[in-house]
Image 1 (cartoon, rainbow, N blue to C red):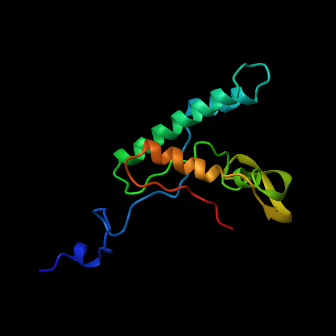
Image 2 (spheres, rainbow, N blue to C red; image 1 turned 135 degrees about the vertical axis):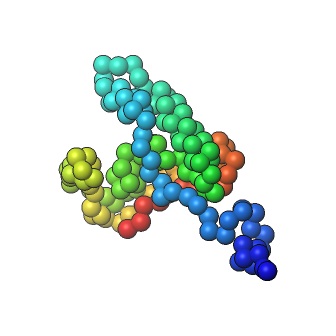
Length: 148
Protein backbone atom coordinates (compact mmCIF):
# COMPACT_ATOMS: atom_id res chain seq x y z
CA UNK A 1 0.00 0.00 0.00
CA UNK A 2 1.26 3.49 -0.84
CA UNK A 3 1.70 6.18 1.75
CA UNK A 4 -0.82 8.73 0.52
CA UNK A 5 0.73 11.51 2.56
CA UNK A 6 4.09 10.96 0.89
CA UNK A 7 2.50 10.51 -2.54
CA UNK A 8 1.02 14.01 -2.49
CA UNK A 9 3.68 15.81 -0.45
CA UNK A 10 5.43 18.47 -2.56
CA UNK A 11 9.15 17.87 -3.00
CA UNK A 12 11.14 19.38 -0.16
CA UNK A 13 7.99 19.93 1.95
CA UNK A 14 9.12 19.77 5.59
CA UNK A 15 5.77 19.62 7.39
CA UNK A 16 3.96 16.44 8.40
CA UNK A 17 0.76 17.46 6.62
CA UNK A 18 0.17 18.25 2.97
CA UNK A 19 -2.72 20.57 3.86
CA UNK A 20 -1.27 22.98 6.35
CA UNK A 21 -3.37 24.13 9.27
CA UNK A 22 -3.55 27.81 10.14
CA UNK A 23 -6.04 30.48 11.19
CA UNK A 24 -7.41 33.43 9.26
CA UNK A 25 -5.57 35.86 11.51
CA UNK A 26 -7.82 37.69 13.95
CA UNK A 27 -7.85 36.38 17.48
CA UNK A 28 -9.64 37.77 20.54
CA UNK A 29 -7.51 40.31 22.35
CA UNK A 30 -6.73 39.70 26.01
CA UNK A 31 -8.70 42.03 28.28
CA UNK A 32 -5.48 43.57 29.58
CA UNK A 33 -4.48 44.58 26.02
CA UNK A 34 -7.80 46.37 25.55
CA UNK A 35 -7.14 48.14 28.86
CA UNK A 36 -3.67 49.12 27.62
CA UNK A 37 -5.27 50.65 24.51
CA UNK A 38 -7.64 52.64 26.74
CA UNK A 39 -4.70 53.91 28.80
CA UNK A 40 -2.82 54.94 25.67
CA UNK A 41 -5.79 57.00 24.51
CA UNK A 42 -6.28 58.63 27.94
CA UNK A 43 -4.38 61.93 28.12
CA UNK A 44 -4.42 61.81 31.92
CA UNK A 45 -2.25 58.67 32.06
CA UNK A 46 1.49 58.44 31.54
CA UNK A 47 1.02 55.23 29.52
CA UNK A 48 2.83 56.01 26.26
CA UNK A 49 3.60 54.51 22.85
CA UNK A 50 6.52 52.48 24.26
CA UNK A 51 4.25 50.99 26.93
CA UNK A 52 1.68 50.16 24.24
CA UNK A 53 4.35 48.50 22.07
CA UNK A 54 5.47 46.34 24.99
CA UNK A 55 1.87 45.30 25.75
CA UNK A 56 1.13 44.50 22.09
CA UNK A 57 4.39 42.53 21.79
CA UNK A 58 3.50 40.52 24.91
CA UNK A 59 0.03 39.77 23.53
CA UNK A 60 1.49 38.77 20.14
CA UNK A 61 3.97 36.42 21.85
CA UNK A 62 1.17 34.89 23.92
CA UNK A 63 -1.09 34.24 20.94
CA UNK A 64 1.74 32.98 18.70
CA UNK A 65 2.75 30.55 21.43
CA UNK A 66 -0.86 29.44 21.87
CA UNK A 67 -1.14 28.75 18.14
CA UNK A 68 2.06 26.69 18.24
CA UNK A 69 0.92 24.72 21.30
CA UNK A 70 -2.36 23.94 19.54
CA UNK A 71 -0.40 22.29 16.72
CA UNK A 72 -1.04 24.74 13.88
CA UNK A 73 1.44 24.34 11.03
CA UNK A 74 1.56 28.06 10.17
CA UNK A 75 1.07 30.58 12.98
CA UNK A 76 0.17 34.27 13.21
CA UNK A 77 0.39 36.86 15.97
CA UNK A 78 -3.40 37.06 16.21
CA UNK A 79 -3.38 40.63 14.85
CA UNK A 80 -2.83 41.97 18.35
CA UNK A 81 -1.64 45.38 17.06
CA UNK A 82 -4.66 45.85 14.79
CA UNK A 83 -7.88 47.58 15.75
CA UNK A 84 -9.92 46.31 12.76
CA UNK A 85 -9.05 44.56 9.50
CA UNK A 86 -9.78 47.47 7.13
CA UNK A 87 -9.21 50.52 9.32
CA UNK A 88 -5.73 49.27 10.32
CA UNK A 89 -4.51 49.29 6.71
CA UNK A 90 -6.34 52.42 5.61
CA UNK A 91 -4.74 54.49 8.37
CA UNK A 92 -1.31 53.48 7.00
CA UNK A 93 -2.00 53.90 3.29
CA UNK A 94 -2.49 57.24 1.53
CA UNK A 95 -5.55 57.71 -0.66
CA UNK A 96 -8.28 56.92 1.88
CA UNK A 97 -10.77 59.23 3.53
CA UNK A 98 -12.65 58.18 6.64
CA UNK A 99 -16.42 58.48 6.73
CA UNK A 100 -17.07 58.12 10.44
CA UNK A 101 -17.90 55.20 12.65
CA UNK A 102 -20.02 52.37 11.29
CA UNK A 103 -21.54 49.53 13.31
CA UNK A 104 -20.04 46.19 12.34
CA UNK A 105 -19.57 42.79 13.97
CA UNK A 106 -22.35 42.98 16.50
CA UNK A 107 -21.98 46.07 18.65
CA UNK A 108 -18.53 47.18 17.51
CA UNK A 109 -18.02 50.46 15.68
CA UNK A 110 -15.10 51.16 13.37
CA UNK A 111 -14.02 54.12 11.27
CA UNK A 112 -14.76 52.92 7.72
CA UNK A 113 -12.73 54.38 4.83
CA UNK A 114 -13.36 55.07 1.16
CA UNK A 115 -10.74 55.34 -1.56
CA UNK A 116 -10.64 59.00 -2.66
CA UNK A 117 -7.26 59.25 -4.38
CA UNK A 118 -4.42 57.13 -5.70
CA UNK A 119 -3.56 54.51 -3.11
CA UNK A 120 0.09 54.61 -2.00
CA UNK A 121 2.10 53.60 1.03
CA UNK A 122 5.66 54.13 2.21
CA UNK A 123 5.74 52.11 5.42
CA UNK A 124 6.95 48.57 5.87
CA UNK A 125 4.82 47.63 8.89
CA UNK A 126 3.97 44.20 7.45
CA UNK A 127 7.66 43.29 7.27
CA UNK A 128 8.04 44.28 10.93
CA UNK A 129 5.05 42.13 11.89
CA UNK A 130 6.50 39.19 10.00
CA UNK A 131 9.97 39.60 11.51
CA UNK A 132 8.60 39.90 15.06
CA UNK A 133 6.39 36.82 14.73
CA UNK A 134 9.14 34.85 13.01
CA UNK A 135 11.53 35.69 15.86
CA UNK A 136 9.14 34.41 18.54
CA UNK A 137 7.84 31.33 16.69
CA UNK A 138 9.39 27.98 15.91
CA UNK A 139 6.74 27.19 13.26
CA UNK A 140 6.43 28.92 9.88
CA UNK A 141 4.56 32.22 10.16
CA UNK A 142 2.32 34.39 8.01
CA UNK A 143 1.06 37.96 8.22
CA UNK A 144 -2.63 38.36 7.33
CA UNK A 145 -3.47 40.99 4.71
CA UNK A 146 -7.05 42.13 4.28
CA UNK A 147 -8.37 41.56 0.77
CA UNK A 148 -10.63 43.87 -1.20
